[in-house]
Amino acid sequence: MIVFNWILLIAVLQSGEGYPGRPLPLTKGTHVELDQFPSAFYAPAICDAEGNIYMRVAGAVSYRRAPVWKYSSHGRKLAAFQLPDAKDQAFHLGGYFPAADSFDEVTYDGTDTWVFHFKSDGSLEDKIRLSAPESLIPEDLFVFPRGNLLVRGYIQSGKRENEEFSAIFSSDGKLIKEFKHKDSDGKPLKKSEEPSQPDASFAGGPDGNAYVTRGNHVTVISPYGETIRSFDLLVPGQDFHAAKLEISGSILSMEYLRFDKKGIPEVRFRTYDLRGNLQYEYVPDETLRGGPLCFSENEGYLFYDGNGSQTYFVRAAIH
Image (tube, rainbow, N blue to C red):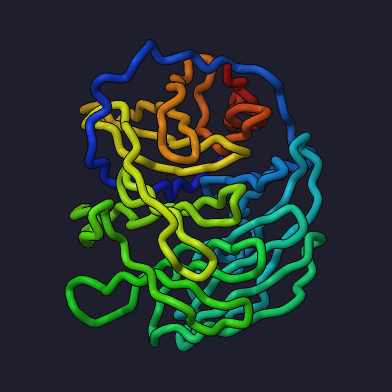
């Protein structure tokens, strides 16, 4: 099994010193085997709010048309989402957003930025063109419950550094409001100096708002782009980088990574309430050797694992 890893890191700005208590171990629990596992996929796989698992499959076609397969939380294949043929060499896949009853993917075709909307069975329902700046290369997509879109990417400028861009669009593609990262005092937050680190991570909360990160700073924004509140997360330490934000129920989970001198990663998870108050810290033990996939308030963390000839998922329950 081959995994193409495109996990990117976000710079962390705050030390986690003063954490009250020892980290809790995560151990191997429920085994989840997929009924049709691909020979290769592009990591990371992700999950929707219902626990369904999504993986972009590699190998059968070019990356520009690589489909996304959907599985139930028990491993049964439910659907495949396949974009139409892309003839333009500038075609760019910009991320996807799954929900239990729909699936959306944002792309750039060399001229325009599009969002493709699929039904839950994998059939293409509609596509819309975003009224976005010219040459917007999308990287991430979030869909609000009522259909508005949050898109993050960059604008090709021809200069040494491209211009970053995040904005809210209506469900029919009209630009509503551009979003700028600011700290709790309203001052602009600069993106990481590391070119490999993205400027944001998105997650949807039970309040219908989007939670957007830059480093350890979280901004909660409404479907129309207003800032509801913002806060900073207490992180494990200065060497850890925030890698992935997830929200399930009333729990916010952040995955943190740091690398030793040999480049071997160390993973930690922290959970918070929806105002950023620290709850628990979890450390995967040696039984969990695969990569983490997603978090569920009820089922814990999902990892992919294997024995050399077979790949499967395992769940690690939280306390």
